[in-house]
Length: 218
Image (cartoon, rainbow, N blue to C red):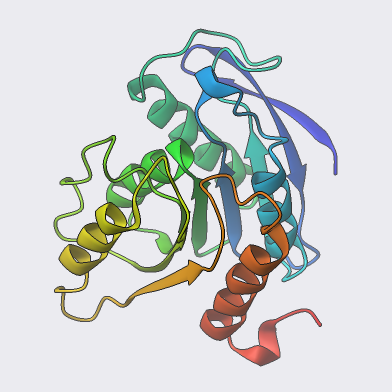
């Protein structure tokens, strides 16, 4: 898991990158939760998601948004962070020129950023949004949602009520040819404390289903 430094709009960005063994393997980008509430690329959910992709043969990148860890710049309320995510995808594509597709995964604030990136980049063919903060941020840009994906939530989330996410899912489900799958992890709060394993079972199972079992690393 080599440490990488790449250029972002606000200066250097610190990341961790795992190259795939196959040159045409898909790219996975994993985005961390809110920088002002302790979110970093070493968040347990981000770290575990990263390895869900690694174990299925992706080239995977996770990184610190501007102003976090050794990434330069300062928090920019989502605008700059979206630019950072785009720069991360550019970087991953530059070192994987034969990769045809990519996936975006994000947790909380990272899910909001990831779904915005999804709207801008047609090569993103799948997404995983964990506890998207549908009551705290505007998700109306998802019209229409261009890719199928998974939204996972805990039924004991006190930060983002399940009803807020349900409303988002219902809105997204109306598009033809796009399948939005929703999974609820029983007993899990917003941070999936004591529920990381069931969360990762959901994430891994969804990836296996979308990739086809024969493509999944056992």
